[in-house]
Length: 58
Image (cartoon, rainbow, N blue to C red):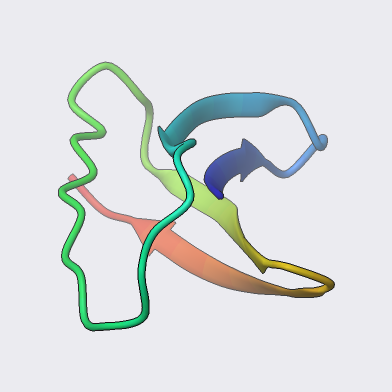
């Protein structure tokens, strides 16, 4: 699962919902309708998860 959140913790979009087989994947995030700013993405895999910060600059 791959989701994007704003700084207040509101879910902006869910980019990947389905379970994936091991491998390398690419996902395109289009923030056309979002203002510039800081966002967070959360990647979950089984019992593991990681949250990283990203900046959207227009």
